[in-house]
Length: 185
Image (tube, rainbow, N blue to C red; front, side, top):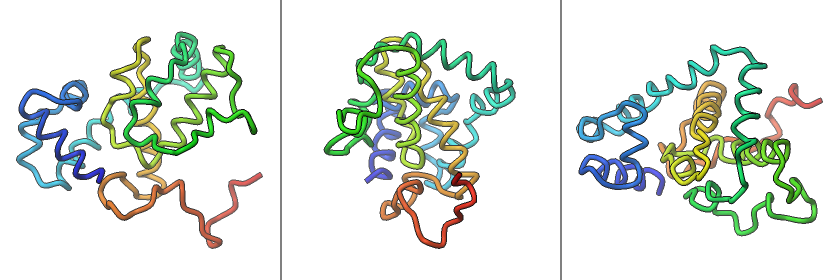
C-alpha cells in the first residue's frame, strides 16, 4: 500500500499537484525526472536527498539538543502532525492514553519534546517521507528532519527502507528471541 501511495503521490507531483510536490521540491528533487526511473532508483535518489540529516549530524550534540528544544518550545501540541500522518493508524494512540499516561496534557517544552520523540520512534522504519506532518504544522517545526534522521539510522542499522516491501513489518515492531540484548540496561 505504501508503494502504491508513493507512486500516486510522485505522479501527482510530476503533474504539479498533490501532497508530495512541495516535499520533493524541498529535497531538491524533480518529480518528472523521478517518474522516469525504476522504483529502486527512485528510492536511491530519495536516500541521497538526506543532506539535511548529514548537515545536522555535523553539529555538536548539545547544539542539536538546543535547536530541538527551541523548536519544540514553539509546539502548541495541536496534533495536526499526528492526525494527518498516513501511518498513524493505531486504533488507540498510546500518546492519548491516560493509563498509563506517557505524556502530560500540559504544553511544556519537556512534554512537547517527549511527545515528538515518542512519535518519531514510533514512525521510525515506517515513515514514507511524504512530509505531511511538516506541511500541516502551524508552527513550522521541521519534523521531517527528525523523521529523516531516524529513517537514516534504521537503514544503516537494519538495512530496511519503508515502503519497498508491502508485506514487511516495520523494523522496530519486530522482536525475535535471537535479537541481541546488549543494548538493554
